[in-house]
Length: 102
Image (cartoon, rainbow, N blue to C red; front, side):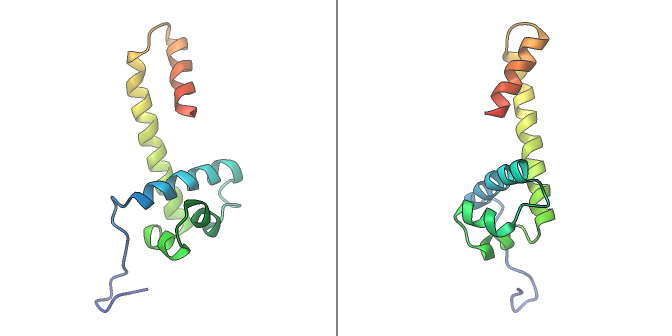
């Protein structure tokens, strides 16, 4: 899909639908795996049209990459909070992983 200027339209990076899509895609990739995950299912779960999903992420590979980037940012944030936990290194790691899994 291209505009009259030859540039494909897209959804702005700060559009809240992107976060919803990422959240549902992350769950789908975790539960079903990459191969079994379907873009149409993610769109349905995220309550967006398939067209909107493809405007945000033109392929499953790009969506997976965005999910991995979001997950690494999330993990980094949780790791940075680890210094605020008290106890042994093992206890702090267990607490951080427990919080991260939620």
